[in-house]
Image (cartoon, rainbow, N blue to C red; front, side):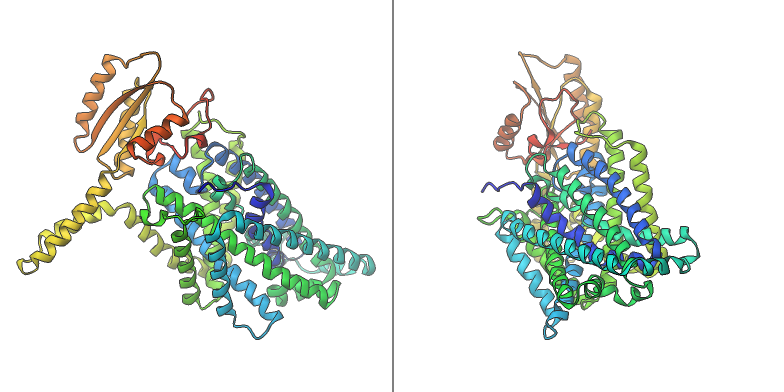
Length: 578
Protein backbone atom coordinates (compact mmCIF):
# COMPACT_ATOMS: atom_id res chain seq x y z
CA UNK A 1 0.00 0.00 0.00
CA UNK A 2 1.39 3.39 -0.99
CA UNK A 3 1.74 5.73 1.98
CA UNK A 4 0.97 9.43 1.89
CA UNK A 5 4.00 11.67 2.30
CA UNK A 6 4.15 14.11 5.18
CA UNK A 7 3.97 17.85 4.58
CA UNK A 8 6.02 20.53 6.34
CA UNK A 9 3.95 20.99 9.47
CA UNK A 10 3.02 17.34 9.98
CA UNK A 11 6.71 16.34 9.77
CA UNK A 12 7.76 19.30 11.94
CA UNK A 13 5.18 18.35 14.57
CA UNK A 14 6.45 14.75 14.85
CA UNK A 15 10.04 15.78 15.56
CA UNK A 16 9.14 19.19 17.04
CA UNK A 17 7.20 17.74 19.96
CA UNK A 18 10.38 16.02 21.10
CA UNK A 19 12.76 18.95 20.81
CA UNK A 20 10.35 21.66 22.03
CA UNK A 21 9.23 19.60 25.03
CA UNK A 22 12.75 20.27 26.36
CA UNK A 23 11.64 23.73 27.51
CA UNK A 24 9.73 21.98 30.31
CA UNK A 25 12.98 21.10 32.05
CA UNK A 26 16.08 22.40 30.23
CA UNK A 27 15.76 26.03 31.32
CA UNK A 28 15.60 24.99 34.98
CA UNK A 29 18.53 22.57 34.62
CA UNK A 30 20.61 25.25 32.92
CA UNK A 31 19.81 27.81 35.64
CA UNK A 32 20.90 25.27 38.28
CA UNK A 33 24.21 24.84 36.41
CA UNK A 34 24.89 28.38 35.16
CA UNK A 35 22.79 30.60 37.41
CA UNK A 36 22.01 34.05 36.03
CA UNK A 37 23.94 33.30 32.81
CA UNK A 38 21.74 30.34 31.83
CA UNK A 39 20.07 32.26 28.99
CA UNK A 40 23.50 32.95 27.48
CA UNK A 41 24.46 29.24 27.65
CA UNK A 42 21.18 28.44 25.89
CA UNK A 43 22.00 30.97 23.16
CA UNK A 44 25.36 29.22 22.63
CA UNK A 45 23.45 25.96 22.17
CA UNK A 46 21.19 27.67 19.62
CA UNK A 47 24.34 28.71 17.72
CA UNK A 48 25.64 25.10 17.72
CA UNK A 49 22.24 23.91 16.54
CA UNK A 50 22.39 26.39 13.66
CA UNK A 51 25.62 24.70 12.54
CA UNK A 52 23.93 21.31 12.74
CA UNK A 53 21.17 22.62 10.49
CA UNK A 54 23.83 22.96 7.79
CA UNK A 55 25.41 19.60 8.66
CA UNK A 56 22.13 17.70 8.50
CA UNK A 57 21.03 19.65 5.44
CA UNK A 58 24.13 18.61 3.51
CA UNK A 59 24.13 14.96 4.56
CA UNK A 60 20.44 14.21 4.20
CA UNK A 61 20.23 16.36 1.06
CA UNK A 62 22.92 14.16 -0.48
CA UNK A 63 21.53 10.90 0.95
CA UNK A 64 17.79 11.38 1.64
CA UNK A 65 17.20 7.94 3.11
CA UNK A 66 15.93 6.88 6.54
CA UNK A 67 18.52 6.14 9.18
CA UNK A 68 20.15 9.43 10.17
CA UNK A 69 23.71 8.89 11.39
CA UNK A 70 23.44 5.20 10.47
CA UNK A 71 22.65 6.08 6.86
CA UNK A 72 25.52 8.51 6.36
CA UNK A 73 28.09 6.16 7.92
CA UNK A 74 26.75 3.22 5.91
CA UNK A 75 27.35 5.17 2.70
CA UNK A 76 30.69 6.70 3.68
CA UNK A 77 32.28 4.24 6.12
CA UNK A 78 31.93 0.57 7.13
CA UNK A 79 28.82 -1.35 8.09
CA UNK A 80 30.14 -1.93 11.61
CA UNK A 81 30.61 1.82 12.18
CA UNK A 82 27.09 2.44 10.89
CA UNK A 83 25.73 -0.25 13.22
CA UNK A 84 27.46 1.44 16.18
CA UNK A 85 25.71 4.73 15.38
CA UNK A 86 22.41 2.90 14.94
CA UNK A 87 22.79 1.20 18.31
CA UNK A 88 23.32 4.56 20.02
CA UNK A 89 20.32 6.03 18.21
CA UNK A 90 18.05 3.17 19.28
CA UNK A 91 19.22 3.55 22.90
CA UNK A 92 18.48 7.26 22.67
CA UNK A 93 14.97 6.59 21.37
CA UNK A 94 14.29 3.97 24.06
CA UNK A 95 15.36 6.37 26.82
CA UNK A 96 13.44 9.24 25.21
CA UNK A 97 10.23 7.23 24.99
CA UNK A 98 10.34 5.97 28.58
CA UNK A 99 11.50 9.26 30.11
CA UNK A 100 8.91 11.28 28.20
CA UNK A 101 6.10 8.86 29.02
CA UNK A 102 7.09 8.64 32.69
CA UNK A 103 7.52 12.41 33.08
CA UNK A 104 4.17 13.02 31.35
CA UNK A 105 2.47 10.68 33.81
CA UNK A 106 4.20 12.41 36.74
CA UNK A 107 2.62 15.67 35.55
CA UNK A 108 -0.71 13.86 35.19
CA UNK A 109 -0.29 12.54 38.74
CA UNK A 110 -0.10 16.16 39.93
CA UNK A 111 -3.50 16.73 38.29
CA UNK A 112 -5.03 13.34 39.20
CA UNK A 113 -3.23 12.01 42.33
CA UNK A 114 -5.09 8.68 42.22
CA UNK A 115 -3.25 7.32 39.15
CA UNK A 116 -0.34 4.89 39.41
CA UNK A 117 2.54 6.47 37.45
CA UNK A 118 4.17 3.23 36.22
CA UNK A 119 0.89 1.64 35.12
CA UNK A 120 -0.11 4.87 33.38
CA UNK A 121 3.32 4.96 31.66
CA UNK A 122 2.74 1.41 30.35
CA UNK A 123 -0.69 2.40 29.05
CA UNK A 124 0.68 5.49 27.31
CA UNK A 125 3.39 3.48 25.55
CA UNK A 126 0.76 0.92 24.52
CA UNK A 127 -1.46 3.70 23.14
CA UNK A 128 1.28 5.05 20.90
CA UNK A 129 2.17 1.53 19.77
CA UNK A 130 -1.40 1.17 18.53
CA UNK A 131 -1.40 4.64 16.97
CA UNK A 132 1.80 4.07 14.96
CA UNK A 133 0.61 0.61 13.86
CA UNK A 134 -2.36 2.42 12.28
CA UNK A 135 0.08 4.42 10.11
CA UNK A 136 2.33 7.48 10.15
CA UNK A 137 -0.20 9.79 8.46
CA UNK A 138 -2.82 9.13 11.14
CA UNK A 139 -0.29 9.58 13.95
CA UNK A 140 0.99 12.84 12.43
CA UNK A 141 -2.45 14.41 12.85
CA UNK A 142 -2.28 13.75 16.59
CA UNK A 143 1.30 15.12 16.66
CA UNK A 144 0.24 18.32 14.89
CA UNK A 145 -2.61 18.99 17.34
CA UNK A 146 -0.22 18.47 20.28
CA UNK A 147 2.43 20.70 18.69
CA UNK A 148 0.06 23.62 18.07
CA UNK A 149 -1.38 23.37 21.59
CA UNK A 150 2.12 23.31 23.11
CA UNK A 151 3.32 26.41 21.25
CA UNK A 152 0.08 28.22 22.14
CA UNK A 153 0.51 27.47 25.85
CA UNK A 154 4.16 28.56 25.75
CA UNK A 155 3.13 31.84 24.09
CA UNK A 156 0.48 32.32 26.81
CA UNK A 157 3.08 31.77 29.55
CA UNK A 158 5.51 34.23 27.91
CA UNK A 159 2.78 36.89 27.69
CA UNK A 160 1.91 36.51 31.39
CA UNK A 161 5.60 36.67 32.34
CA UNK A 162 5.99 39.93 30.40
CA UNK A 163 2.87 41.35 32.11
CA UNK A 164 4.30 40.32 35.51
CA UNK A 165 7.58 42.09 34.76
CA UNK A 166 5.76 45.19 33.51
CA UNK A 167 3.84 45.37 36.80
CA UNK A 168 6.73 44.51 39.14
CA UNK A 169 9.83 45.85 37.39
CA UNK A 170 13.30 44.30 37.14
CA UNK A 171 14.21 44.27 40.84
CA UNK A 172 14.37 40.45 40.98
CA UNK A 173 16.60 40.40 37.90
CA UNK A 174 18.97 42.91 39.50
CA UNK A 175 19.05 40.85 42.72
CA UNK A 176 19.86 37.67 40.78
CA UNK A 177 22.73 39.32 38.91
CA UNK A 178 24.15 40.60 42.20
CA UNK A 179 24.55 37.03 43.49
CA UNK A 180 27.89 35.14 43.25
CA UNK A 181 28.43 33.39 39.92
CA UNK A 182 27.86 29.62 39.95
CA UNK A 183 31.17 27.74 39.90
CA UNK A 184 33.16 30.81 40.88
CA UNK A 185 33.57 32.30 37.41
CA UNK A 186 31.50 33.13 34.34
CA UNK A 187 33.59 30.69 32.27
CA UNK A 188 32.88 27.76 34.61
CA UNK A 189 29.20 28.68 34.82
CA UNK A 190 28.88 28.81 31.03
CA UNK A 191 30.81 25.53 30.62
CA UNK A 192 28.50 23.51 32.86
CA UNK A 193 25.48 25.50 31.73
CA UNK A 194 26.28 24.74 28.08
CA UNK A 195 26.66 21.02 28.87
CA UNK A 196 23.29 20.96 30.64
CA UNK A 197 21.64 23.11 27.97
CA UNK A 198 22.57 20.68 25.18
CA UNK A 199 19.75 18.49 26.47
CA UNK A 200 17.50 21.08 24.90
CA UNK A 201 18.32 19.95 21.36
CA UNK A 202 17.59 16.25 21.87
CA UNK A 203 15.18 15.25 19.13
CA UNK A 204 16.84 17.32 16.41
CA UNK A 205 18.12 14.10 14.84
CA UNK A 206 14.62 12.58 14.60
CA UNK A 207 13.60 14.11 11.28
CA UNK A 208 16.51 12.40 9.51
CA UNK A 209 15.21 9.00 10.61
CA UNK A 210 11.91 9.29 8.72
CA UNK A 211 12.94 11.51 5.79
CA UNK A 212 11.60 8.99 3.26
CA UNK A 213 8.09 9.54 4.65
CA UNK A 214 8.37 13.30 3.98
CA UNK A 215 7.51 15.10 0.76
CA UNK A 216 10.41 16.35 -1.35
CA UNK A 217 11.90 19.55 0.08
CA UNK A 218 10.22 19.20 3.50
CA UNK A 219 13.26 17.97 5.48
CA UNK A 220 15.27 21.25 5.52
CA UNK A 221 12.11 23.08 6.55
CA UNK A 222 11.73 20.81 9.58
CA UNK A 223 15.30 21.67 10.60
CA UNK A 224 14.62 25.39 10.24
CA UNK A 225 11.35 25.22 12.19
CA UNK A 226 12.87 23.20 15.04
CA UNK A 227 15.85 25.57 15.25
CA UNK A 228 13.64 28.66 15.43
CA UNK A 229 11.42 27.10 18.10
CA UNK A 230 14.21 26.09 20.52
CA UNK A 231 16.33 29.19 19.82
CA UNK A 232 13.44 31.40 20.91
CA UNK A 233 11.73 29.33 23.61
CA UNK A 234 14.59 28.01 25.73
CA UNK A 235 16.73 31.17 26.17
CA UNK A 236 13.64 33.38 26.51
CA UNK A 237 12.04 31.22 29.20
CA UNK A 238 15.34 31.07 31.12
CA UNK A 239 15.70 34.89 30.97
CA UNK A 240 12.09 35.46 32.01
CA UNK A 241 12.53 33.01 34.90
CA UNK A 242 15.40 34.99 36.45
CA UNK A 243 13.28 38.14 36.03
CA UNK A 244 10.35 36.79 38.06
CA UNK A 245 11.81 34.47 40.72
CA UNK A 246 14.90 34.27 42.95
CA UNK A 247 17.39 31.69 41.69
CA UNK A 248 17.24 29.96 45.07
CA UNK A 249 13.66 28.96 44.22
CA UNK A 250 14.66 27.18 41.00
CA UNK A 251 16.54 24.28 42.60
CA UNK A 252 13.44 22.97 44.37
CA UNK A 253 11.09 23.51 41.41
CA UNK A 254 12.98 21.70 38.63
CA UNK A 255 10.39 18.89 38.28
CA UNK A 256 7.51 21.30 37.63
CA UNK A 257 9.40 24.48 36.73
CA UNK A 258 7.03 25.91 34.13
CA UNK A 259 3.96 25.15 36.23
CA UNK A 260 5.56 27.14 39.05
CA UNK A 261 6.22 30.02 36.65
CA UNK A 262 2.56 29.84 35.64
CA UNK A 263 1.44 29.97 39.27
CA UNK A 264 3.61 33.06 39.93
CA UNK A 265 2.49 34.99 36.87
CA UNK A 266 -1.09 33.88 36.18
CA UNK A 267 -2.30 31.77 39.08
CA UNK A 268 -3.37 28.15 39.52
CA UNK A 269 -5.47 28.09 36.33
CA UNK A 270 -2.39 28.85 34.21
CA UNK A 271 -0.35 26.27 36.11
CA UNK A 272 -3.07 23.69 35.39
CA UNK A 273 -3.03 24.48 31.65
CA UNK A 274 0.77 24.18 31.61
CA UNK A 275 0.58 20.80 33.39
CA UNK A 276 -1.99 19.55 30.86
CA UNK A 277 0.26 20.81 28.07
CA UNK A 278 3.24 19.01 29.63
CA UNK A 279 1.31 15.75 29.56
CA UNK A 280 0.37 16.16 25.89
CA UNK A 281 3.68 17.40 24.49
CA UNK A 282 5.72 14.80 26.37
CA UNK A 283 3.30 12.24 24.98
CA UNK A 284 4.09 13.69 21.56
CA UNK A 285 7.77 13.01 22.23
CA UNK A 286 6.86 9.35 22.80
CA UNK A 287 5.26 9.35 19.34
CA UNK A 288 8.45 10.84 17.88
CA UNK A 289 10.44 7.94 19.34
CA UNK A 290 8.15 5.33 17.77
CA UNK A 291 8.19 7.00 14.35
CA UNK A 292 11.94 7.68 14.35
CA UNK A 293 13.02 4.22 15.53
CA UNK A 294 10.65 2.55 13.07
CA UNK A 295 12.38 4.23 10.11
CA UNK A 296 15.83 3.39 11.49
CA UNK A 297 15.22 -0.30 12.32
CA UNK A 298 13.44 -0.84 9.01
CA UNK A 299 16.52 0.43 7.19
CA UNK A 300 18.83 -1.75 9.34
CA UNK A 301 16.67 -4.80 8.60
CA UNK A 302 16.76 -4.12 4.86
CA UNK A 303 20.55 -4.08 5.16
CA UNK A 304 20.49 -7.50 6.93
CA UNK A 305 21.84 -6.23 10.23
CA UNK A 306 18.59 -7.48 11.79
CA UNK A 307 16.43 -10.48 10.74
CA UNK A 308 14.11 -10.03 7.74
CA UNK A 309 11.26 -11.16 10.02
CA UNK A 310 10.78 -7.53 11.08
CA UNK A 311 9.87 -6.29 7.56
CA UNK A 312 6.35 -7.76 7.63
CA UNK A 313 3.78 -5.00 7.02
CA UNK A 314 0.08 -4.74 7.80
CA UNK A 315 -2.60 -3.47 5.41
CA UNK A 316 -1.77 0.13 6.31
CA UNK A 317 1.90 -0.32 5.37
CA UNK A 318 3.18 -0.25 8.98
CA UNK A 319 6.03 -2.54 10.04
CA UNK A 320 4.19 -3.62 13.16
CA UNK A 321 6.82 -6.15 14.25
CA UNK A 322 9.44 -3.40 14.52
CA UNK A 323 7.05 -1.25 16.51
CA UNK A 324 6.18 -4.22 18.74
CA UNK A 325 9.87 -4.92 19.36
CA UNK A 326 10.51 -1.31 20.33
CA UNK A 327 7.48 -1.35 22.65
CA UNK A 328 8.80 -4.51 24.33
CA UNK A 329 12.25 -2.94 24.78
CA UNK A 330 10.72 0.19 26.31
CA UNK A 331 8.64 -1.87 28.74
CA UNK A 332 11.72 -3.88 29.74
CA UNK A 333 13.57 -0.63 30.49
CA UNK A 334 10.58 0.63 32.49
CA UNK A 335 10.52 -2.59 34.55
CA UNK A 336 14.29 -2.72 35.14
CA UNK A 337 14.56 0.94 36.20
CA UNK A 338 11.17 0.94 38.00
CA UNK A 339 10.47 4.22 36.25
CA UNK A 340 13.38 6.05 37.90
CA UNK A 341 14.44 9.01 35.80
CA UNK A 342 18.16 9.34 36.65
CA UNK A 343 19.37 6.01 35.15
CA UNK A 344 17.37 6.74 32.01
CA UNK A 345 18.71 10.28 31.84
CA UNK A 346 22.25 8.89 31.71
CA UNK A 347 21.45 6.81 28.64
CA UNK A 348 19.42 9.63 27.11
CA UNK A 349 22.07 12.33 27.44
CA UNK A 350 25.16 10.41 26.37
CA UNK A 351 23.39 8.52 23.57
CA UNK A 352 21.94 11.47 21.73
CA UNK A 353 25.09 13.61 22.13
CA UNK A 354 27.19 10.76 20.73
CA UNK A 355 24.76 10.39 17.82
CA UNK A 356 25.15 14.11 17.06
CA UNK A 357 28.94 13.67 17.11
CA UNK A 358 28.68 10.71 14.72
CA UNK A 359 26.59 12.82 12.36
CA UNK A 360 29.25 15.54 12.26
CA UNK A 361 31.92 12.87 11.63
CA UNK A 362 29.72 11.40 8.90
CA UNK A 363 29.53 14.81 7.26
CA UNK A 364 33.34 15.03 7.20
CA UNK A 365 33.61 11.52 5.75
CA UNK A 366 31.05 12.44 3.11
CA UNK A 367 33.16 15.43 2.09
CA UNK A 368 36.29 13.26 1.83
CA UNK A 369 34.94 10.02 0.36
CA UNK A 370 31.86 11.18 -1.56
CA UNK A 371 33.05 14.58 -2.76
CA UNK A 372 31.40 14.15 -6.19
CA UNK A 373 27.98 13.41 -4.74
CA UNK A 374 25.54 16.28 -5.51
CA UNK A 375 24.05 18.03 -2.48
CA UNK A 376 21.64 20.97 -2.17
CA UNK A 377 23.83 22.79 0.38
CA UNK A 378 27.30 22.45 1.85
CA UNK A 379 28.39 23.03 5.44
CA UNK A 380 31.88 24.60 5.56
CA UNK A 381 34.41 22.16 7.02
CA UNK A 382 35.53 24.64 9.71
CA UNK A 383 31.95 24.98 10.96
CA UNK A 384 31.47 21.20 11.01
CA UNK A 385 34.60 20.85 13.15
CA UNK A 386 33.35 23.64 15.43
CA UNK A 387 29.98 21.89 15.85
CA UNK A 388 31.73 18.59 16.60
CA UNK A 389 33.94 20.35 19.16
CA UNK A 390 30.82 21.79 20.80
CA UNK A 391 29.25 18.35 21.17
CA UNK A 392 32.49 16.91 22.60
CA UNK A 393 32.57 19.73 25.18
CA UNK A 394 28.97 18.94 26.13
CA UNK A 395 29.79 15.22 26.48
CA UNK A 396 32.80 15.99 28.66
CA UNK A 397 30.80 18.48 30.75
CA UNK A 398 28.00 15.99 31.42
CA UNK A 399 30.43 13.22 32.38
CA UNK A 400 32.46 15.57 34.61
CA UNK A 401 29.33 16.87 36.33
CA UNK A 402 27.87 13.35 36.74
CA UNK A 403 30.59 10.63 36.49
CA UNK A 404 28.07 7.93 37.41
CA UNK A 405 26.24 8.72 34.15
CA UNK A 406 29.02 7.08 32.12
CA UNK A 407 28.84 3.84 34.11
CA UNK A 408 25.05 3.69 33.78
CA UNK A 409 25.26 4.40 30.06
CA UNK A 410 27.78 1.58 29.53
CA UNK A 411 25.51 -0.84 31.38
CA UNK A 412 22.92 -0.32 28.66
CA UNK A 413 25.23 0.26 25.72
CA UNK A 414 27.56 -2.76 26.03
CA UNK A 415 24.80 -5.45 25.87
CA UNK A 416 23.17 -3.62 22.97
CA UNK A 417 26.36 -3.38 20.89
CA UNK A 418 27.19 -7.04 21.66
CA UNK A 419 23.84 -8.10 20.20
CA UNK A 420 24.35 -5.98 17.08
CA UNK A 421 27.93 -7.26 16.71
CA UNK A 422 26.66 -10.83 16.95
CA UNK A 423 24.19 -10.13 14.14
CA UNK A 424 26.95 -8.69 11.95
CA UNK A 425 29.19 -11.70 12.65
CA UNK A 426 26.42 -14.33 12.52
CA UNK A 427 27.98 -16.11 9.53
CA UNK A 428 31.24 -16.63 11.44
CA UNK A 429 29.30 -17.67 14.54
CA UNK A 430 27.38 -20.28 12.54
CA UNK A 431 30.66 -21.63 11.09
CA UNK A 432 32.00 -22.11 14.63
CA UNK A 433 28.75 -23.78 15.69
CA UNK A 434 28.91 -26.20 12.74
CA UNK A 435 32.47 -27.18 13.66
CA UNK A 436 31.39 -27.61 17.28
CA UNK A 437 28.53 -29.86 16.20
CA UNK A 438 30.97 -32.04 14.29
CA UNK A 439 32.96 -32.68 17.44
CA UNK A 440 29.98 -33.78 19.54
CA UNK A 441 30.13 -37.37 20.80
CA UNK A 442 28.38 -40.22 18.96
CA UNK A 443 25.62 -40.49 21.54
CA UNK A 444 24.34 -37.12 20.44
CA UNK A 445 25.07 -37.64 16.75
CA UNK A 446 21.44 -37.60 15.56
CA UNK A 447 20.67 -34.32 17.31
CA UNK A 448 23.99 -32.88 16.15
CA UNK A 449 23.36 -33.88 12.51
CA UNK A 450 19.89 -32.31 12.54
CA UNK A 451 21.19 -29.09 14.12
CA UNK A 452 24.16 -29.00 11.73
CA UNK A 453 21.85 -29.35 8.72
CA UNK A 454 19.71 -26.52 10.01
CA UNK A 455 22.76 -24.29 10.48
CA UNK A 456 24.08 -25.22 7.03
CA UNK A 457 20.72 -24.23 5.55
CA UNK A 458 20.77 -20.87 7.39
CA UNK A 459 24.32 -20.21 6.24
CA UNK A 460 23.40 -21.10 2.65
CA UNK A 461 20.42 -18.72 2.72
CA UNK A 462 22.59 -15.97 4.16
CA UNK A 463 25.41 -16.39 1.64
CA UNK A 464 23.16 -16.95 -1.38
CA UNK A 465 21.85 -13.38 -1.31
CA UNK A 466 23.19 -11.77 -4.49
CA UNK A 467 24.63 -8.27 -4.66
CA UNK A 468 24.96 -5.97 -7.67
CA UNK A 469 27.53 -3.32 -8.51
CA UNK A 470 26.91 -1.02 -11.47
CA UNK A 471 30.26 -0.50 -13.17
CA UNK A 472 31.26 1.72 -16.08
CA UNK A 473 33.34 -1.19 -17.37
CA UNK A 474 36.59 0.72 -17.64
CA UNK A 475 38.32 0.60 -14.23
CA UNK A 476 39.40 -2.72 -12.72
CA UNK A 477 40.97 -0.96 -9.71
CA UNK A 478 37.53 0.32 -8.72
CA UNK A 479 36.11 -3.19 -9.01
CA UNK A 480 38.84 -4.51 -6.73
CA UNK A 481 37.88 -1.90 -4.10
CA UNK A 482 34.26 -3.00 -4.48
CA UNK A 483 35.16 -6.63 -3.87
CA UNK A 484 37.23 -5.70 -0.81
CA UNK A 485 34.30 -3.71 0.58
CA UNK A 486 31.80 -6.52 -0.03
CA UNK A 487 34.14 -9.15 1.46
CA UNK A 488 34.61 -7.08 4.62
CA UNK A 489 31.06 -5.80 5.10
CA UNK A 490 28.59 -8.26 3.56
CA UNK A 491 27.87 -11.98 3.79
CA UNK A 492 27.52 -13.32 0.24
CA UNK A 493 29.19 -15.50 -2.38
CA UNK A 494 27.44 -14.06 -5.43
CA UNK A 495 28.06 -10.68 -7.04
CA UNK A 496 26.79 -9.39 -10.36
CA UNK A 497 28.93 -6.69 -11.98
CA UNK A 498 26.68 -4.80 -14.39
CA UNK A 499 27.77 -2.32 -17.07
CA UNK A 500 25.00 -0.29 -18.71
CA UNK A 501 26.39 0.86 -22.07
CA UNK A 502 24.91 2.87 -24.94
CA UNK A 503 25.10 2.49 -28.74
CA UNK A 504 26.43 -1.07 -28.85
CA UNK A 505 29.52 -0.09 -26.83
CA UNK A 506 31.68 -2.87 -25.44
CA UNK A 507 34.28 -2.88 -22.65
CA UNK A 508 37.89 -3.09 -23.75
CA UNK A 509 39.65 -6.43 -24.14
CA UNK A 510 42.06 -5.37 -21.40
CA UNK A 511 39.18 -4.77 -18.97
CA UNK A 512 37.67 -8.20 -19.74
CA UNK A 513 41.07 -9.85 -19.26
CA UNK A 514 41.61 -8.00 -16.00
CA UNK A 515 38.11 -9.02 -14.86
CA UNK A 516 38.99 -12.70 -15.33
CA UNK A 517 42.12 -12.14 -13.26
CA UNK A 518 40.10 -10.40 -10.54
CA UNK A 519 37.55 -13.23 -10.55
CA UNK A 520 40.34 -15.73 -9.86
CA UNK A 521 41.61 -13.52 -7.03
CA UNK A 522 38.32 -14.08 -5.16
CA UNK A 523 37.76 -17.85 -5.46
CA UNK A 524 35.12 -17.84 -2.71
CA UNK A 525 33.03 -15.36 -4.69
CA UNK A 526 30.95 -16.13 -7.78
CA UNK A 527 31.48 -12.99 -9.90
CA UNK A 528 29.28 -12.59 -12.97
CA UNK A 529 29.85 -9.81 -15.49
CA UNK A 530 26.73 -8.59 -17.34
CA UNK A 531 26.49 -5.98 -20.13
CA UNK A 532 23.13 -4.25 -20.63
CA UNK A 533 22.47 -1.95 -23.54
CA UNK A 534 20.62 1.23 -22.66
CA UNK A 535 20.77 3.99 -20.05
CA UNK A 536 21.20 3.78 -16.30
CA UNK A 537 17.86 5.00 -14.93
CA UNK A 538 15.68 4.42 -11.85
CA UNK A 539 13.34 2.38 -14.07
CA UNK A 540 16.19 0.09 -15.07
CA UNK A 541 17.18 -0.39 -11.41
CA UNK A 542 13.56 -1.21 -10.56
CA UNK A 543 13.33 -3.66 -13.46
CA UNK A 544 16.54 -5.50 -12.58
CA UNK A 545 15.60 -5.60 -8.89
CA UNK A 546 12.31 -7.30 -9.76
CA UNK A 547 13.75 -9.65 -12.39
CA UNK A 548 16.64 -10.83 -10.23
CA UNK A 549 14.79 -10.63 -6.92
CA UNK A 550 17.57 -8.51 -5.44
CA UNK A 551 16.49 -5.67 -3.10
CA UNK A 552 17.75 -2.27 -4.21
CA UNK A 553 19.69 -1.73 -0.99
CA UNK A 554 21.87 -4.68 -2.11
CA UNK A 555 22.74 -2.78 -5.28
CA UNK A 556 25.80 -0.52 -5.18
CA UNK A 557 27.13 2.38 -7.24
CA UNK A 558 30.08 4.75 -7.02
CA UNK A 559 29.36 8.34 -5.99
CA UNK A 560 27.65 10.09 -8.93
CA UNK A 561 28.88 13.49 -10.10
CA UNK A 562 27.02 16.72 -10.76
CA UNK A 563 26.17 15.56 -14.31
CA UNK A 564 24.23 12.54 -13.06
CA UNK A 565 20.63 12.92 -14.24
CA UNK A 566 18.89 11.65 -11.12
CA UNK A 567 18.85 12.23 -7.36
CA UNK A 568 20.17 9.39 -5.21
CA UNK A 569 16.77 8.90 -3.54
CA UNK A 570 15.17 8.28 -6.96
CA UNK A 571 17.19 5.05 -7.17
CA UNK A 572 15.13 3.63 -4.31
CA UNK A 573 17.84 2.88 -1.76
CA UNK A 574 20.81 1.94 -3.97
CA UNK A 575 23.91 2.32 -1.78
CA UNK A 576 27.07 4.32 -2.39
CA UNK A 577 30.22 2.37 -1.52
CA UNK A 578 33.00 4.27 -3.34
